[in-house]
Image (cartoon, rainbow, N blue to C red; front, side, top):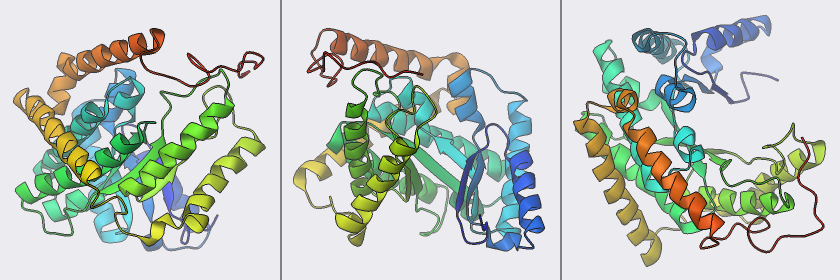
Length: 324
């Protein structure tokens, strides 16, 4: 792989410096220029804390590494993003769209403050951040979530004094892991298709479409090919990338976007009142809210008030569960 021509995406956990060093060593081995690196090699210590319940090092040390790598990339690899804000831990825990968005924005604000306190200006710090969201099967809600995310982040960066370019949010999306099932797994393929569709209409910049069997095993060549071709069909045949904000102007989408943005902003302000995202996580507040929503969602599926096709409704009786 020619790293000078291929954008990369590496989720590096609490600190990205070790991974970045290995990538730079490979670029040097290829006689390439590190200045041509693009994509993302990024740390997300709060995402690591939310997802695993612990950090392998102190949070202050992780922020020091984040600032050091971001400062280096600003002068040596300007197209490389070094900070990641993941909504996945909240979504995969059962959170709703408002919670995922609010906690992601609160995390981004925390990172901006920490980078600024270590000498980085807002117009250097904000463009270094990549947001990663999960895409659930509620089609219009996911479109609204991504559109609302851009609105809220622009508001945040403007409040920090960032210029217009710095207010632009870069979004990586991936199809949900929370709603995939080992029962009637072919339905997972249908879900990833609608989820990817909503991600494109919502305006993501890059996307991971999960193979239908990835929740239980290493995906097969066939399921990987189907996932890759889903990208290609949406881009080349459906032509969705030829329009900017194709869902814009729809009364329903615009109204839903506004509603999600307002509710997420209110929840974000609650987190800020607790001292920010790190303090809120240490107090267990986001965990408690997500757990409550997750329990209610599980109950709705158990009582068939909500439908999970092929699992709690419309199952294929002869189908065998997905084997590890």
